[in-house]
Each structure stands twice: as C-alpha cells, then as structure tokens.
Image 1 (cartoon, rainbow, N blue to C red):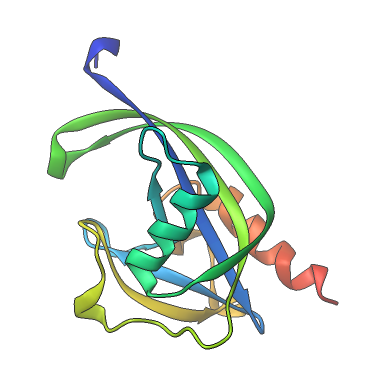
Image 2: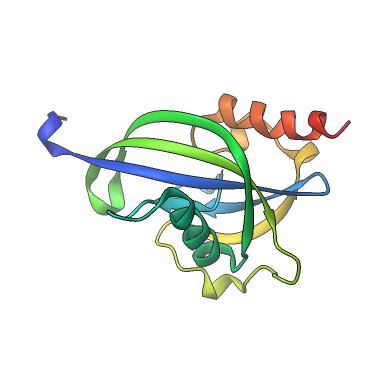
Length: 147
C-alpha cells in the first residue's frame, strides 16, 4: 500500500500476571490470543491509555509495574479497511485487589472478546495473533523471573 494510505497508531498493551496466569483476550478475526490494550488517543498519556484500555476490555484496574517490550509493526486491518504503522508498547501489570473480570458481553472493543486468565504453561507461540515469538518469549520469561 502507498504510505499515504497508512495511519499512525501508537498503542499500549498490558501483560497482567497473577500466579503464573495472564489475562488474554480472543481476537474475533482469527480466534487467537492478544493482550488487553489498544490505541493511545491524541493528548492522552501512555499510562492513562493503558489503564483505560485494560478497564474497557477486562473491567480490571491495574498497577503498571514496568515496560516489557516495544515493537514497530505495519499491518492491514480488514474490518476498517485500514493500513497501520503501529508502535506497540507492552507493560507488565498487576490487577488491583478487589477488581475482577467483566462479563463477556460488557467488553468494550471491536476486535477482542472473552477476557480469561490463561495458565502460562499451556501457551505456545502459535496461540498469539501477532509477534508470536517475541510475545511468547516475554510471557515465558515472567515465570522464570519468579523462580
């Protein structure tokens, strides 16, 4: 696609860890897993966007612990017929006590559904929608950090 057809999209995603499980959502378009998060609005601080996106997609309030991964990506998203130049920033997060996952029908997202706590040991690279090897390595490193 010609570069004038691309949209710039900085985005943030939370890797929410608890007892060797992480929260993942299922993508409607391909049935694979992805992390809660999404685009940063113009004028919105990165951490505010991360908290907002996680809350919209999972119902959780989180503590942001540290950055985990930064990737640049170019992709086409068919439902919006748009091409994107994306900066993807992944942060390690922890759910705040007293917050819980929302019901599936309350998820506020066009692409992601069904937030679930998934045991890390059950994941494989092909389970992820994109950046499979990078994301799998990061998730695996989180369990190693605790040992």
